[in-house]
Length: 297
View 1 (tube, one colour):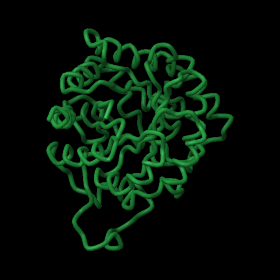
View 2 (spheres, rainbow, N blue to C red; view 1 turned 180 degrees about the vertical axis):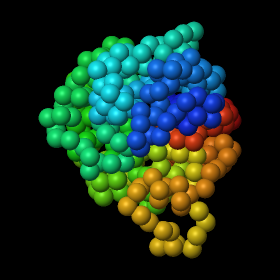
View 3 (cartoon, rainbow, N blue to C red; view 1 turned 90 degrees about the vertical axis):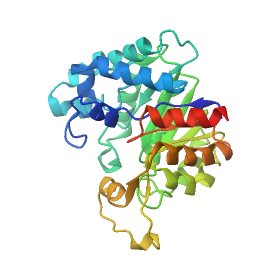
View 4 (cartoon, rainbow, N blue to C red; view 1 turned 120 degrees about the horizontal axis):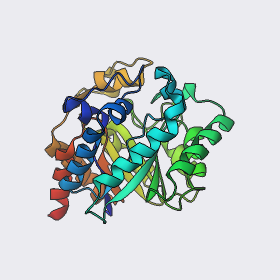
């Protein structure tokens, strides 16, 4: 393994008492950029202390479509620049730590049905790339819920950086499909036509990442940054109750796991040849430290 990513930002801000409104209806972690930028820096720094060597900029929900919820879409550029500046501040004294600029979905997470036309996506990702180019070490297209948006994000990212990572989300209760209903393996094969450095999965139960690692291994290099949760112990996946809300499925059918348990799952990814490992929702710097300690062994 070459890179250790940081842990989740939104949940960690909430754990530390910072204001984080609902991600489905408001601007979620963007509120910290506006009201508590020092909190963002603290979390970046704590992840670096824990042992990560890549931090992700906190602009995941800084998209014009999301910012419209608070009538601040005109602050898209300034908030994006702020997220990058906070990451730069955080890694001072740690030149080996890379900054990954986030290329997020343009709309609400896990809702590819809301994704607008390719023309709108091109305009958004092109604007985002022009803002962060030469200020980040790589671009991470993350939590992509459909092949169309993932490929669009990556193609645009490649116009601004020669280092692009593309991360799909297989959040759900099977792990072999994207929120769009498309197969994870088909997404990986489609993205193999692009010159991306690495393909990953994120924001899924940790054991579902493990279960579907063979699909990921079809990429040039692969990585995982999952949630600190695993499927409930039940007889079969047919026993799990499904709704149309992928997020409800995720939390209704999974249970939290400890940093130690998460690190054990991460060890499997590493042993399988992962290029990148880290943490997404409900992971904390302690999870990253446990993985770093495992690597030292």
